[in-house]
Image 1 (tube, rainbow, N blue to C red):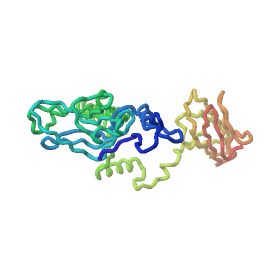
Image 2 (cartoon, rainbow, N blue to C red):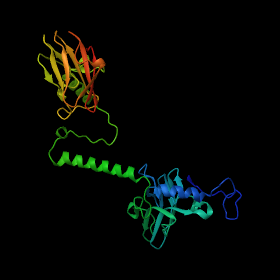
Image 3 (cartoon, rainbow, N blue to C red):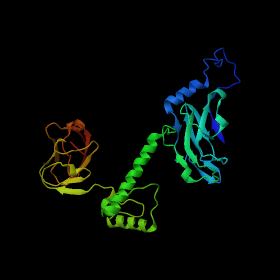
Image 4 (cartoon, helix red, strand yellow):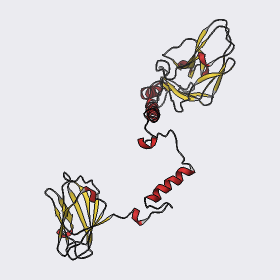
Length: 328
C-alpha cells in the first residue's frame, strides 16, 4: 500500500485565492514548506533496505518498503511493491521512484512508478534500470542503485548513516589489524561488536574463573573485600598523595601525627575523592592544610578526638575539603 500527504483538501470552501476558509487556515503547501526546510528531499535509510529495487522474476521487479519526502510532501510505501514491465524491441532506460503531482493532490499513480525521463523538480528516483532490446528477463546487472545519489534521491537521515559507515570502517580496520599486523586480539584488547553479543558457556566459565582468581565472589554477591577501603597503618606523619584516595589510613603513635593535605598542583585530586582515617593509639591525627588549601570542619575542629576515633576527608573541589567524624 502507498500512502502520502499533505495535500490540500478539495472539499473545503476556499476564497478567491484558493486558500481554505477558516481561522487563519493555510493550504497544504504551507505545511509542506516547513517539512522541506527541515528535512529536504530524500528517503529515510532506516532500515537500509528502504526503497531498494531488485529483479524478482521475468520482467517483474520488487521495491522494498520505505518512507521519504519530496518538496515537503511525505510518501510511504507500507509494504514491498512488485512492478511488472513489458518487453520492448528497443533498448530503454527507466527510473524507479515517485513523481510529485501537487495539482492533483497525489504522487503520480498514487504509488511507486517506473518512468523514462527524470526531473529533479518533481521526482525522487531510487534506481535506474537499463534494459536491452527484446529483453524478457530483468537481471541484477541492469539495476543501478540511486538511493545514495543526492542528485536523484539522497537520504534525510544522513548523520545516522554516516555514523554507521564510520563504525563499519572502524570494524574493518580492527579486523585488518588482527589479520595483517600479527597482533593478537588479546594483545590489542579491542573487540568490535556489530550487534548484541552472548557469551558461550566456556566464555562464562572463564570469566568466573578470572574473577575467582582475583579473590572476588563469583556467585553474583559481593564480598566485603570488594567494597571496603584498603587498610594501611602509619606510625609517622605524612603528606597525602593521590594513591591514598579510597583507602582507610590508620595512624598509631603515642604522640600526635600530622596529615598534610596538599594542593591539587601537587596531587591531582578530583571532586568527590574520599580518604578515611582511624586513630589507633593515644596520639591524635592532626589535619593540616597546605598553602592555598581549605579544610571545612565543625567548630574549627582539626584533629581526631581520641583513640579509635574515625574521620573522613572528602574533596569538594576548588582546593576545599570537608572533614567529618569523631573530631575536635
